[in-house]
Image 1 (cartoon, rainbow, N blue to C red):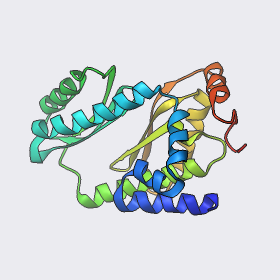
Image 2 (tube, helix red, strand yellow; image 1 turned 90 degrees about the horizontal axis):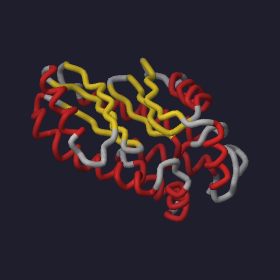
Image 3 (tube, rainbow, N blue to C red; image 1 turned 180 degrees about the horizontal axis):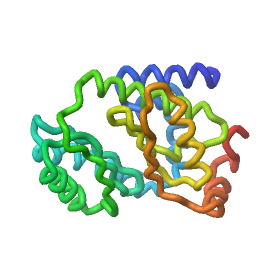
Length: 212
C-alpha cells in the first residue's frame, strides 16, 4: 500500500467515525501505530495520563454544564485545552476548577466561550476541518505529524504539541492554508533545537521528516 492510499484511508476513517487512533491502526497496522507511540515527544507515562485526563473530563464536565453547554477536553503532555460553550462565566470557572482538580493535570488553557451551544452542522464542519489539517500535516515532509494535536472549535483551529519555534510556525501555516479555517491558535509547549535533535537521535530510524 503506498503512502497516498494509506493517507486517504486515514482521512476517510476519521471523517466517518472521528477516531484517529483506531483509524491509523486500520490503515497502517498495529506495528506502525506502536512505532508512532514510541516516537511521540511525550513520555509513555504522559501519553497514558493524557488519555486518563480526557476520560475523566468527559465523565465530569457534562454534569456541570448540562444540556445548555458543550465542552471539549483535550490533553497533551498533561496540559489541558478546554474549548466549547457554556451559559455563563460562573460555569466556565467551575469547569476549569474541576479539570484542575484532576491529579495528573499540570496546566489548564481555558478557551471556553460564554455562548449558545454550537449546532450539529458547526461541529460537523469542525470535524472536517480537523481531518483536513491532520491530513495536510501527515502529508508534509517537513514536520513530524505525531508531534502535534489538532482541535477545531467553530472554525478556530487550536494546535497543541511539543515543538520548536520553527516547527510551530510551519504547522500554523499549514493549518491556515486549509479552507474553512477562520483562526489558528498555537497552544504549543516550545522545545529547543537541541531537544529536537535528541528526539531525532532517539527515533527508530534516526531520520528527519521526509527522509524515510
